[in-house]
Length: 89
Image (cartoon, rainbow, N blue to C red; front, top):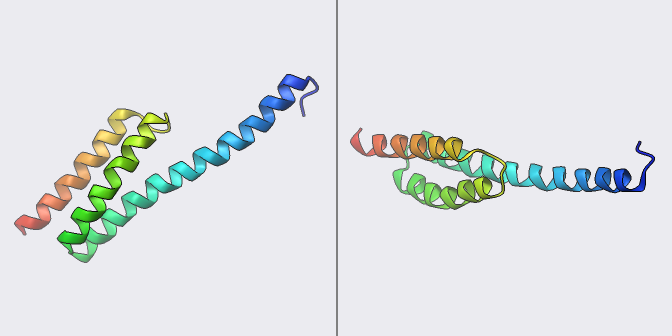
């Protein structure tokens, strides 16, 4: 444990920030899973709805610096491609 007061404070802040970031990352992963679940079930309407709900969550995760913008773009692109593929099948 740190001896200097400012270092102790930073350690406390790090614990809080980590918990906050884990919650946001969990929300991101959950929104992705909801889309994938709808795709697996073959329900295009539910997949579109879940995708529309997931996009702002993905974008806010980028804004908070938890994931890179290119990773977010890749996830959105791949989810959208899988949804579009459902319509063709």
